[in-house]
Image (cartoon, rainbow over the protein chains, first blue to last red):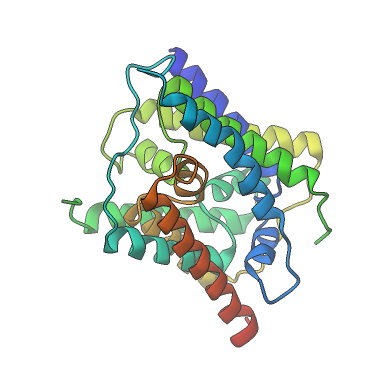
Length: 139
Length: 141
């Protein structure tokens, strides 16, 4: 139960952060990625600011035997750099560059009622389902 | 598109980072949205499906509340329907194949100095920049 409230609260914080930073606006994101055009630094500021509390937390956790409300930390410990990782990142990068939305902002943009967000999210879910049913599990 | 006072991306970033920090320290989990979505949909193995559903619901609530409070203008889309479909499928497939997105690899992975995440972030950033360059300055789309 407490972990559920935390999940809800963290989601609320995240969604709020996405809207406040205007990362739900594809035009703003594309303007950051458009290094040869009318450049907008906002995304860099978002990332830099986000890394501060995040880095502090990941530092703190090294001194913790367990999380405060759950049984154990569930952090992936793989160090493998393989084609899946890099290929997946590249494929994601193309998709992101085509529209200017990544998963979080796409979900958040749904609340605006924008039909483009609906189409994108449906396609994104289809892409995730495609991966799940087409790809063999990683070894 | 109006210029945005840097206070907004900084404040928004802090909220996102805070979300990730709390999710880690309290629930012991990575606040990676692609992972949370896949988990919520039942397309990823692992515990925490109910938590993931609540996280996504919370995201919708937080976004809606903020939008109402700030009276944010509507997001501006320039992508055509084919691009929305292609982009969506690529983002969905790619984030699963690559085990993460801007939140999982970027905000969380870099914060914990994960080599995998740092490399993944460099790759998706570089490819996204290249994609936009080709689309806007080569193809003129």
